[in-house]
Amino acid sequence: MQKIMKLSIIASAIILTSITSVNAQAKEFTIGTGATENQMQQNDETDPCISAMAYKLIENRCAENAKLLNIKRQLLTTSLSWPLKTAASFTDCSYYFIGAYVDQNSASGVFKDWNCGKRSYDGHGGTDIGIWPFPFNKVDSNSILVIAAAAGTIIDKHDGEFDRNCVGVGSGLSANYIIIQHADGSLALYWHMKKNSITSKTIGQTVVVGEKIGVVASSGSSSGPHLHFEVWSGNTASTRIDPYYGTCNLLNASSWWTSQKLASEPAILKASVHITDYIPKACPKSDTTNESTFYTMPFSGPGMPTDYAKFFIFLRDVSTGSSVDMKILNPNGTTYSSWNYTFTNAFNVCYAGWSKHLPIIPGVCTFQATYNGVACSQNFTISTNTEISKSDKLKTILIYPNPATDNLTIETPQNAKIEILNTAGQIIKTMYTADKQICIDISNLSSGVYIIKVKTEKGVVVEQFIKE
Ligand SMILES: [Zn+2]
Image: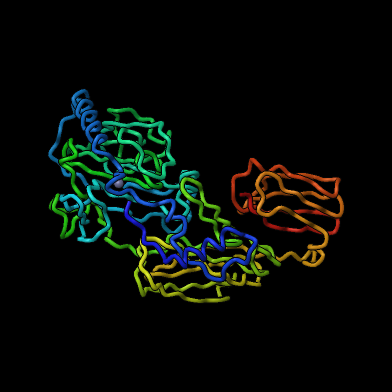
């Protein structure tokens, strides 16, 4: 994948300072390329997505299977749809960025993309579509699906390989992949997918356009979760084309996309509300997002001033001097607060986050960010804890440690009913305690933000905790 522009060391240091100690004051403003510096280093000429040896193996396998299947080549032209889609449960504004296009400069040691830009690496044969933010969380939740860009016959496939690689590995067939031959004889290669996610259809069976064929991950020679999508007009790597057409495409005379995307697509991929800074984790770990859509006032996020939350935006194709407008809207749609930010650097992907006071009026509020003329929004709920005052609450109920790993201890003044809910409000655990102290095993919860409700005779206390 293409190099992701890095911030200055000073900015990176600020991020690290704010994440290594969650209990320290969360930074009022955070910007960075975050986990991408670790999770999406990049494939490059020394660690290509598909090695020369792997190309040879694939060519042989495809040729043998084509002979066995005896597929007739027709005079048609293939039109390619976008090879990814999101799972039904996915609600972010977008999810992808281009890491690297096909290298159009055949000379060694230099590279150029179809648009005469530098978004490629020497010898790269396909289009790398990265997923962001929280790439390994997306792998965990099967959020980004690989779909057939065109109808055809499965001519080769391979599955069962480890899918959380961070660097190039080996030169054999270590990726989970599928190759589809289209009616005109052209081939599409889909690489780096999740273990056991490749369609159960067998070699020789057909797929329709848009059919799910796998899940994006980081198997094979891959520096982070992405799809390597490569197209051959014939049955060898030497017939490679670039589906994008532009001035510097020397491989083919027109675009193969049904609808070709622009070389730069500035956009906000996600706008979100977090109880404190999100914690980027080095590849291959999933990030601790600390995201929540549920806030009970008075609210105290780890390291945050009372009633403040962290408002993050995650963007792609950011240009120097461009600006983004942010608004927090009350439940009735009026503006509670607003601010803007102008980028002083260009980024392939980046994020920015601000500590802002939460709206006071209970109800469904909205965080809205607008970039390049398009708004991206996230709703979140504000409720008030009227049953017990903050000072009483602090005196009577203790929940620790927070963040917690395996066990959570709750101290209450008397018998209590305890509920643990996810941020969607679903109850995950219910317990009753007769003791003043209860230790709850949370080792089987996946990492993230949870809500804990402690109901006693004196009232209800609602708190949040982080499972690491
Ligand atoms: Zn690639």
